Amino acid sequence: MLRHRPIITILGLFILMACSSTVWDDVPTPIKEFISSYWPGASVSTYDERNDHYYVTIKNGASLAFDSGYQWTSINGNGVPVPSILIFNEMPRVYQYLEARELTSDLMSAENNPRSIILTFTDFILEYNKETSEIKMITQKE
Image (cartoon, rainbow, N blue to C red; front, side, top):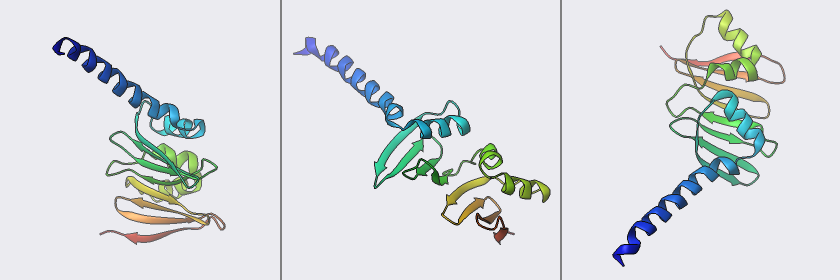
């Protein structure tokens, strides 16, 4: 029985490695592209699909949610700033607003609702109204 122990251990390691590599394989291509654009080289620690929504957690980083059309609905940096290039690419109007006011606080989370996007930065919270393109500061920390 002891002679088979190393073989069982090696087989167990292969199974674990196969399981971890399939997490990325299970993620739909549009979500993979989104993650690769903003978190290049990152690995996915969890992926789940529930009620026509997709949930992904980047290892040591953000948690992301996507709707059935693969549009992001929420991003939580989990204490790590969300890459600012995401604001530049996904919300150019908000980026211009921040740049014009020299607001350099880190984006920590974002909620993409049907009518608005709520952005939580380190020092303040902004709301971007998609219908009117209006941007307003909801709160500002002192």
